[in-house]
Length: 181
View 1: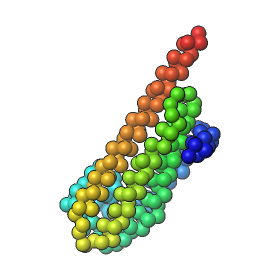
View 2 (view 1 turned 90 degrees about the vertical axis):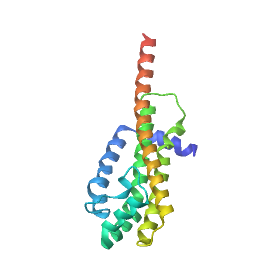
View 3 (view 1 turned 30 degrees about the vertical axis):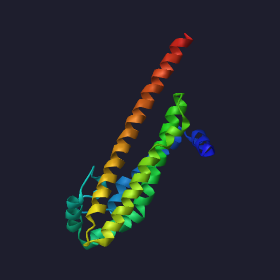
View 4 (view 1 turned 120 degrees about the vertical axis):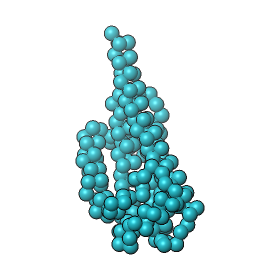
C-alpha cells in the first residue's frame, strides 16, 4: 500500500486533476443519465436516505423497462463511476497535501475509497432488489437505505475534509512564510 500511496503523490498534479475533472463530467452529463434514466421518479442512489416503502414505491413507478435499464446501468457505468470519483478525490487530496505542504499522514488520501465501498455495496443491494421485484425484501430495502445514508454522510465528510485541508494548508503556508521574514 505504501508504494501505491507514493505513486499517487508522485503523479498527482494540477494538470492531471483538470484532465480527470473533464473526464469526470462525462459520467453525470452523458453516461449516467442514459443508463440510469429512471424517468420522472429519479434514481434511488441520489436520495440521502429512504426506507422500504419509498424504495418499493419508486420501483413500482419505474416499470419493467426502466428497472431493467437501471440494473444494466448499475452493472456497467455505475460500477466504474464510484471508483473513478474516489480516485479523483484521492488525487485532489494528494495535490492539496503536496502543493500546500501539509504535515499529515499520507494514508488520509484513501478516505474517499470508504465512500466508494459504500457506493458499490449500495449498488449491489439495489441490483438484488431491482432483480427480485415484485418480490419484496423489506429488511434488505431498509438496510440499503441506511447504506445510502452512510455513503452520503461520508461523502459530505470528505468534502469537509478537503475544505479543511485547503484551509490548513494555506494557514501552514502563511505561517511558514511569516516565519521566514
